[in-house]
Length: 180
Image (cartoon, rainbow, N blue to C red; front, side):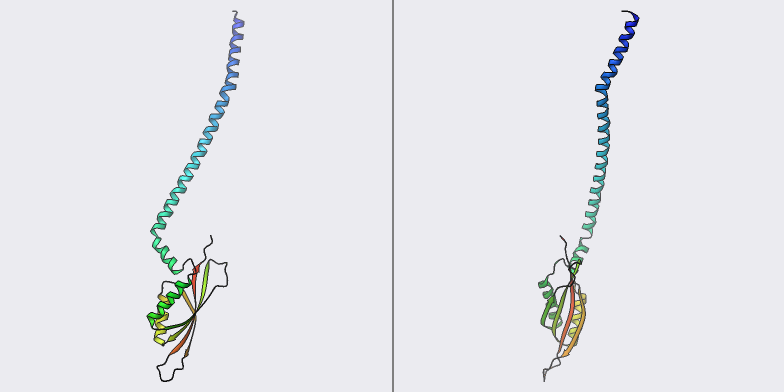
């Protein structure tokens, strides 16, 4: 073998090695590069999900710490209209004060788009003035939010008996409209 042939053989083998590397090595190299990029992207997604889960756990612990506050708020402004509960509350307050509940009229609110809804109440009561002030005091201190906006009084005409007054109390009670 002559030195020229040796040079041609060396150049041919080097060229063959470059072609083999180009055919088999470069796709593997590109694949490894793509996998490294995908791994980095997955690690970013994993870290963001880990942060989100940590925030959810923190919110859950805050909710657990404030669950008593949430239950108090939901009892002040319940999430349902609860007409029976409202009537029983008014009846219990009137019994505690010595007033006699004659009539209860209920109505809905005008704007159904708002989250905070109102229930109109008109109460017909009979009793004396100290009982009325005690009634208003108990309504004010009641857990359920009731807003008295109008009060009228008239004297009942019962001859020969103690003075009895008729009261008309107009109020609004509130509840939350849940959008589901």
